[in-house]
Image 1 (cartoon, rainbow over the protein chains, first blue to last red):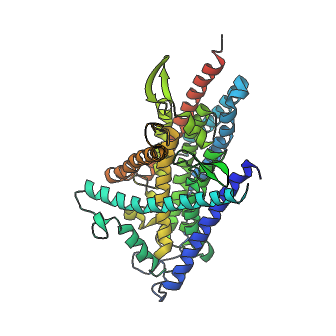
Image 2: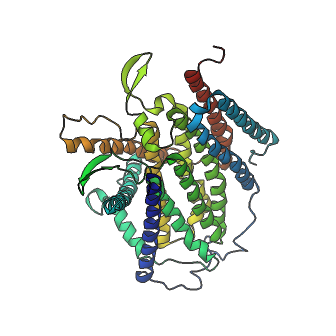
Image 3: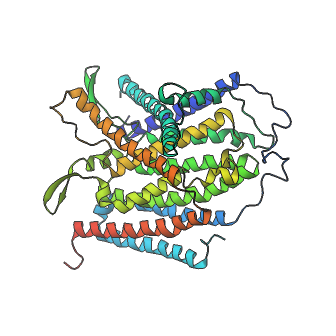
Length: 121
Length: 361
């Protein structure tokens, strides 16, 4: 097995070990902890009074817009990392391409700001 | 790869786990003690000397507590969320080297043992990916609880964590650009010499923070926001939305979220040290001191540096009031992200001039 895969085997071993540890501890607590749910105990928490309506209420749409914007910028970061590693061999043309790429996205952010999307009110 | 190599990998995995658990236990105590000191209180002082076993006591208590499962929850996701919080927290630390690699002779062969879970060639991207996965835990916990306060905490987490995630990702690009590698051990190695300024060796370590100070600032602010720590703890703001996303969790399920938070805090401090302050590099005085001491010293430097950062984390919590949500979003989108992009331009241009010369020459 090559060095390359050896590293990822270690990652997999780590994930498996962590998962087993967490599941095992939760399993052991299942055996030792008390469990006597009553009707009141399993109601949804709402500061002591009986819960009103459903738990899944409507929430502010703004959160969703930030989610959309995030996708753009995280994808941008993912594209920038490979360039940063290979910046030397890509030379000046690569540099120019990245500048155009970033400017395009920066313009998008500017558009969002001017549109008032980022205003929270 | 023979069985000894396999054994070494297993040993490393177990060592990193033991380290994280030990650090987490001490860190909770450390935070409570420091915050208590800053508020003129004594803090925990009953369990063990100076209350150092307080976290263990709390853990044992939570272990034997009843885990109430409210009737309205989405059971599958509700149970998966704590695990989804804890496992990525473990995984994130494994690429951070916490000491100098050493060689041992086993089975008639010299073997290099790095003090690091795995030295991935995409180390930094892996860290970012794992911190993205951690967001799911908070969002799913909030949503699957079927309750109003957790839902609010969940949607707050969506917008907050991802905003600062983007800023953090962009702030790390200059580090890769400057070092030319995403492999964390190489980033550490690049910082292990001393700085040369105008041809003079000024004897100061060549830490990235000297050149990439703006990156470091943006990274630190986003790291505090990413770990949902004060002053960015809107996800679990007690005074506004009870416990936020973990309102409906009790017993060990709650403890797992708690554990994940403190491990993340430690990992973020370790990352700040590794990426900007030279990681484990420091004077080891090879040949002057006994070999065992020299081999151990880098680990000591690493933990000393991390401790400084952990103290800053705690200090921030004890000092700053919580941000308002609109301030949080303004800071993220109108300050951090644009400034990290502009900084990326600047550093990219500067490095291009250094490597390829001025455009008109």
